[in-house]
Image (cartoon, rainbow, N blue to C red; front, top):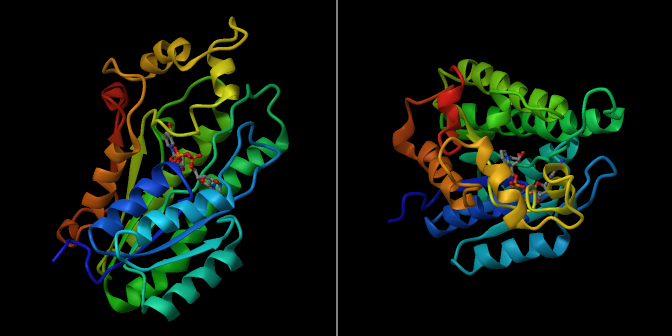
Length: 278
Ligand code: NAD
């Protein structure tokens, strides 16, 4: 029997990128899958977010492994919508055992010129969305005496950089939320842990906005042009990592055998963690 046969895993922001990778791996290892994504752009985010076609493609890939997949267009900043999806999933699949609060956006601007809607979007999607996800699944998990919750922070949740006030604040917030929730749930059989990725090769980093921010000296910067800048953010000489490297850690934290690891933050950031305390 595969590791997650009989389990139900809920992954937010799973239309593409890391969320899709997590959903697919849980599916390959036997879990039934619940996924959501907002499937809409934001005026505060300078690159395209996922589409309904992306979400449908994740469903197709998950179902091709032979497990069940429930999907919905849900903005995780909307508590009522997240609660409704968790209720629906619990009705259809019986419960949620694993939740990965992965949905998030990247925004960047110097604090002197950061528009209010950029701050609001980062906090709504990256912090309130994680709260909404954790708060929606925690009561059922605690009642059943079993749960694995994984939140997604960032290396920018443990250190700062220019133009990162909103993003960094939201991701530092995820760590505080994760540790507090781990303590709240410590006697219930539910663990809560965070991953803190470095540069991960998804549309969040491969887009014109970020490329121009990194290479303002070039008219049309390519991935080869920005690679050295991304590399400088890591300690090991690699510009970005594949989503599957994060998935390996998410799956490890979600395993039944990880019962006594809770409240920790696992960096997957090509050695950048060595530069910060904690
Ligand atoms: P991505 O943009 O490919 O995926 C993020 C997904 O979340 C998209 O499909 C998007 O539509 C969705 N989303 C955004 N806001 C949402 C909301 N409010 N409700 C529902 N869905 C929403 O990027 P990714 O790299 O796969 O990002 C996944 C997570 O990893 C994010 O939390 C991100 O902040 C974090 N992260 C990414 C990197 C990186 O370098 N890519 C580094 C550290 C942390």
